[in-house]
Image 1: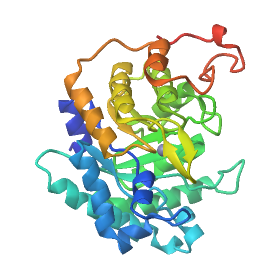
Image 2 (image 1 turned 45 degrees about the vertical axis):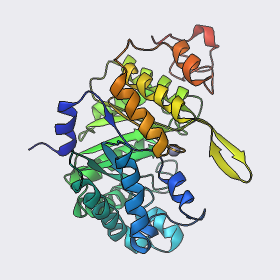
Image 3 (image 1 turned 180 degrees about the horizontal axis):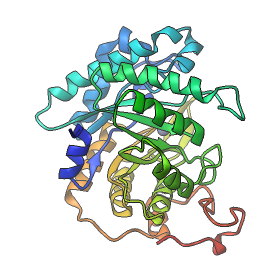
Image 4 (image 1 turned 90 degrees about the vertical axis):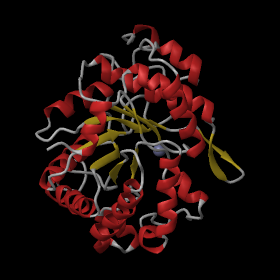
Length: 336
Ligand SMILES: [Zn+2]
């Protein structure tokens, strides 16, 4: 029995995912410090609009509003008992939007980090992390998610705990990490480390990759890092729309729709299959990304110089995968 995402990937050589959740919800009035997942229950029409905007702009896959919907994160809002329910509702609203379309649209049940540090460095045990992810996974499954979608992970221990939980829920999944610290995750994982880790999991993801992080250029350098490992597993690229800048008291992302269209084409040519945006990526970005992917023929794998020429400089000289991460730029391995 094949799941909807595997079926779709068999017929297409790229899939457009969605853009920002947080940036869009803030535009609809969410206050910083509020749990976005409460809106699944309180303002379902706004969540429906969030999903519909992505689908109308051409997304083949969208993430549910459940990124912080695990018990550990909801505890900060006194709602630790509502993880399963709020996750279920996020997927139910998504299921309705997807089923109304006349083309296949995938509902991906978003699962973000617990926000806690895992043992041995921190207090969260493997067993408890599995339990927390399993509870949320069951809610997303009940609500009708096609796949689970782990994202913005930094620690390999947390990625592994989620993989185990998703096996308990008997759900296919995809999982991305956030490479936001000079090419590595906050916990020091490189693109090469992640590609190797994924292949060793007892319950590997359908697709793996990178989301959020620093900017579109860095994200593509990470994608080239996965490809350099020879992995045949589909790769996910969900980069931010440029770099966050403070402007008049709020955060604004400087990536234009035209820049994100370039990014989408380069992501595909670099080897990514599931391509979307993260923070700052709005419907107008997605529309131009879709148009570019449809109209521009596949090109050769871009070089690092082609990426920076099109999208701007990297945030660090190195992607952290060299033998000596502190080595100067000229000694690092060229990717392309
Ligand atoms: Zn992001």
